[in-house]
Length: 170
Image (cartoon, helix red, strand yellow):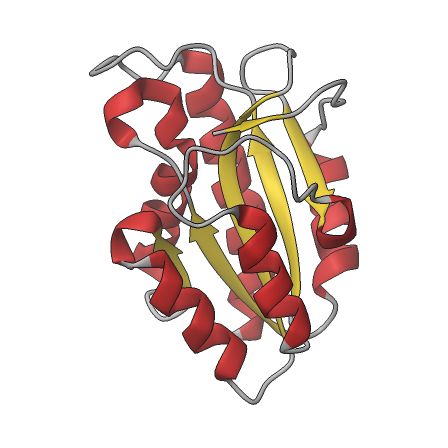
């Protein structure tokens, strides 16, 4: 999970327009981060696992080995965008979202991931790939807790938006 401050929430239509603007016409990959043992902190992984059912070669979670996945995508000879989905404490309502573009990812952000998002974004950027983080505000990170209703709705919304964008690109 990341710690972000003063982050605005987004509607589904606004999130879709932001993602489409970033993605352009190239291939889209989804990389979900988090810890499913910590309730809402697993939001990114839950998005990626849902996306895997429809797009198995374009959707990955932290469970798939994040280092290898990022390196594999960076070595591909194609125009591509990687959307990283992660829970982030933005001090907003549970389920609020925020899109953080590669250039706005702070190298010094606090993270609980083995590989910092800033490093992943930098590797992808050096390989000519575009990346951005879709942050989801958690309500609870209780150990072995259930995903909160607000975060569950946001997970479903992010899956709908990404599915709508990725289907025509198959």
